Structure formats: structure tokens, C-alpha cells
Length: 141
Image (cartoon, rainbow, N blue to C red; front, side, top):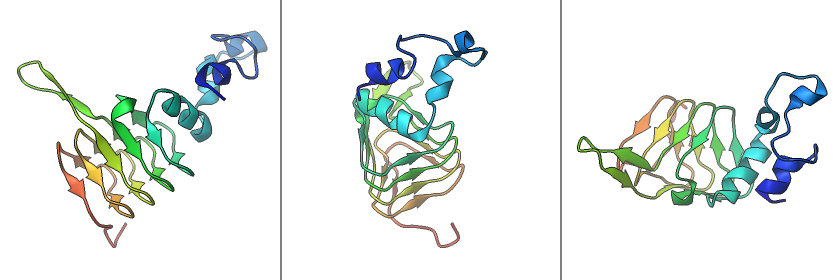
């Protein structure tokens, strides 16, 4: 199922709003489930493994620079952002990876060149700075 097919399913035409079905909710909001987000991000060239779960409010920007392994859980409000603006106004971009069986905590933010090792966990509300790695799981998480 391609992204364009997913956007047409089941209503038939892209851009159709649920308003026509008596709802005031935008059409796209109906597809903010984990499975639909996986389809969307894969179509945007993110490398996302099998059995990955994206909770509500997860943001992946510059999808082509993101690599997420198998059996990963990305919790609510987490952000994977492989770019940043410098003080001089330049935009830096770089890859990031999340290893298999990892967990990204609620409201965590990963930036360019950050890496989460397989089986590791990023604590909730933690920000991984440029080039920072998480190599192990914290016991209390």
C-alpha cells in the first residue's frame, strides 16, 4: 500500500475531509495510527524496521536520514530531528539511528548524528545532543 493509496483509502479521493461524513475532524487525523504513520514515514524514505510502534504525537523530520531498527517503541511526543540550525543560520543535517529492540521515552528528542544502541532506552524528556550515543538501558526505566 503506497502513501497515495493510503490517503485515498477508504474514501476514494485524496484530500477528502471527514466533514462530508458529518465530522469536523480533518481527513488526515483519521490516519494518525501507528500503522498508518509507518506507511507514511516509509514512503518518505525513512528506514523503519518491522514491528515498530509510534505512539501519538511522534515527529520524524528529514525522514531519509533516519534509521529505526526492528521491535522499537517510540513513545508519545518523541521527536527524531536529524538537523539543526547554527547561530550563523546554516542548516546542519546528519543521519541518526535507533537500534533494534530500543525504546525512546516520552517527549525525548534525538538530534543529528545521535545513535541509540540495540536494546537501549532513552529516558523520557531526554535530549540527545549532536553526536551523542545511548549505549545501555537505565535500570529504573
